[in-house]
Length: 336
Image 1 (tube, rainbow, N blue to C red):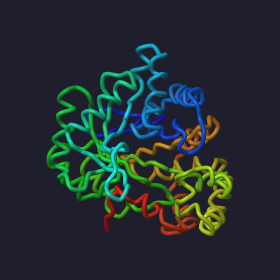
Image 2 (image 1 turned 135 degrees about the vertical axis):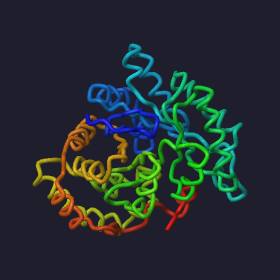
Image 3 (image 1 turned 90 degrees about the vertical axis):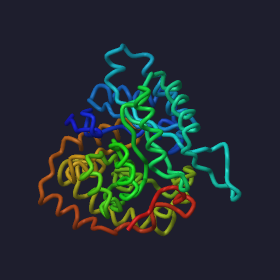
Image 4 (image 1 turned 45 degrees about the horizontal axis):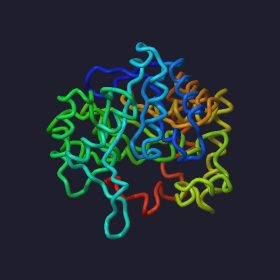
């Protein structure tokens, strides 16, 4: 597995990581055994970057990672570079019933300590503010995160779904290790400034949902499957008629992947890795076979001509529907 820098401390990780939202029941039922199987495959294939969060099953994802780590010898435990997130307060709501974001020092400290306990570790490689609290200056939040580094609880910190300008403000206080954002052939929004700003500042761009929540795979979710997934059944790209349009539009991409002798998901990963060396995809999956497809994709070396052909097949703006519903857009920062 090719190595890439994670942040700006010298840490290197495999070019492909694991998004552990799928270790909870977010995209369908799973269990500890399935999660451990994914982690074991990661261990055996050089995928050492594991990304989780407190809100993934309200601690369930972290607990499953923790129970896997507990069963390893010390060398294998040290192999993994764990990233987790805090800052979403699901126990409290605003006057409209919306989940609140809390980036206070007190809340983030409480969140981080609880995450470390569930993971069974003394520190994590990377700690993200999962969602920004709009009224709290990002400089203040950054100072809190710097204190976590000084305390030895984290090696680096980052922010999830922030704008390039917010990144710039935070970076004036301390180098930001990573910004996490949805980025794939179906979501090109980061190219409007975030890809460029992270590159300039030496910040990793960690790309979640790199296979378009199944649209960039050989078996996109059907309408009936989507109805079983609380998040997707209200997501604009997965409601009809958008879902049917998107499946039809990506058909040629699947055919092109077959022509190249790979799976569509693997080609989607290869495209992202070719885009720039500071981009780190973290696909989530509950399936060993699907993970194998993406591992194979990480080893593909696409030519400029192949990248051009992919752009012709799926040009910028091809997707039907926004990437989030109105409610799902609460928290992520829009820009441009």
